[in-house]
View (cartoon, rainbow, N blue to C red):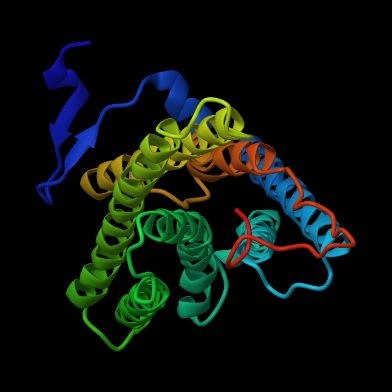
Length: 300
């Protein structure tokens, strides 16, 4: 199929992608829409159970220490996946939810929490890197918190603009577009931060002596997590950008797009979460009689 046949310009000036007939037939299959929601919901619920079990195992192993980065990471993973599973289990009913801002919150909030969850790893790596290079670390956590607060507050304003029936259609559409652009920018920032600090930590570990204990394993761990997370956030940014240009066939989080939902959530959340949880499955060392000394701010 030639490019002119693939891309058309609709009346609003948006590009529209001409999808194959078999794709349109499957997208319009009501049974597939129900089954895809159920399947995605089960996948998220399974990951939530895994994260909670790992959190419990960590707490049993080192109960004397509070909410380390490792514990918070697994807790947030479980929260994100439980929210996502609930949304997909009750996806048709969500369309009728009132007021509309609740629907937007349930659809968009897990994505923001996913960003916070995985950038916790970047924060942890940044602290390790700065400490190893004798650089100050005091500003890292306040900057992380401030950036997240700014993102959530901005998104809250956009939710209000998108859902207020008193506002004009143009304003509500601008709010919807703003939400997409915000998530796109957040994903790009996450991908860049993983490449920046994951790459720096990887290169720093490479300079350690070969006989260093755990060097090879930690190198592989940092390299894999960096590649997976940077890749998933980059794919998410590209798919969000595509949905902005084609609201008809590529709009995300729609009941009528089961194949697109399966592809999108598998690539950007389900598979990356499962892979990272598997890679970071090692428990912290047991407490010895001499006393257990944890890595500052927890383990990741």
